[in-house]
Length: 621
Image 1: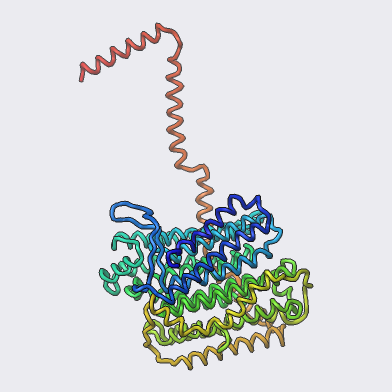
Image 2: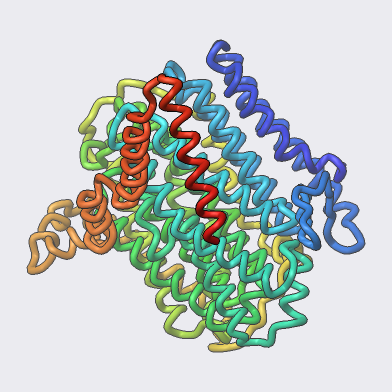
């Protein structure tokens, strides 16, 4: 089965190509079968490969499949080659399986849309690009998948391009992530120039052999790769694109947040962990980016009124936890949280899609309410996902993965009390904004009547994800054992906080957030408005609502100066140089054309005169 590894990206690529070429002429049912069937096939192949890998693991702990040499220039010969180890296996299985559920859900959600086949072509390409990124044997092929998911995010965020707002949101995502991609490209040049290869395993070995701990080159490479990860995973300071990305269809949001795109940065750092172990400063920067982002996004989520934007900020915050884990050396904990997050975040977006569809495309949570009995499937599944997101102790998957990150942070030599306390505050904020969302949407009085109820094609996937959001954390022990075959084990040091103490404190933070949310948004809903009106409350609310003014800052520092420069240079100074050359050439042409009379004697005279001048020049020289 391992020899069929190439099929995992190839099948979605084939589905995307077929739908792009033939899709517009097919019926919806045929499009749904091809679009969803290709991902189902990739999922089955990945599960079969995973079963063989786990039952009969390769002697080296990894399997490499080289299809052909992509580029051959001297010693630089990256191939179209795939590398499968425990890390890429977990990522690929989760990505394909969750993507399949999202595709299945989409067949009903997108019913009747004029771009039905185009949507599934983009979605198939998205999954294929992500799988290519995850399985890539070398950083050049990884970068191809990296840019592929960036392209697909642009296409899907701006899917309803006739609405200008959607088009602008797609452009914003594409442009902002390009900043990070540029840093990553420079990092690849640096690595190849100094280590002579881009094959990931050879590169990590060469870095270990040639760079000392704290080497300036290792630090520079780590920071440049972090720049790429920050852009793709929507972390501070390049997180501004993700909330606006909610303009796309809800299944697209689920795919971006749970199975593709934003998790790419987490995978990149985990895959190149050797560089960060050699660059403690860069690794600490990863932890700081994570802790600041998770707190910042948690505050912003508390102020949003759009149901999908609340979930978007929660994704930014949860990816922050993954970055925090990576930064403190808890590599396996980061990937474990990736897995549980994929389950409950896909669930939350798909359940929110049911609510949005049921209320005739209403997004405002303050116009919702009382849906607990009206939409029981959405309520119970959303509740399961929300509890997993907030970290309901001992029951939900999110508790086990987040608890592992917090304990690791407390006991890492890179972590410590400050980062641990920051992570616990993040738990409080997460519980607070999650249950604020649940209470406003599903409790109280009905504000908007239900106009549509989902079928099983939408209800089935959310039920499966709800089950995984509950039971997914129980594999913690087996997961940690598996990850030690691909990633360094966590080295305990630091505060010496026991896992029981860390879990208990996190549970208290969860309970406090739940109680406060119940008190404010169920028992005394007027308190929320009073808090905003309190001295400085409105200003703080606007500040958090506007993503801490980051868009305003970028608008003043970057966008307006560029627009101003483009305006004053609208005729293009460089073009004027070429226009001048053309004008001079035209002038000479017109002057020379005056000598063209069509009379033979004048032609003969010019020839004779030219001959005399030429002979004179030759004789003088």
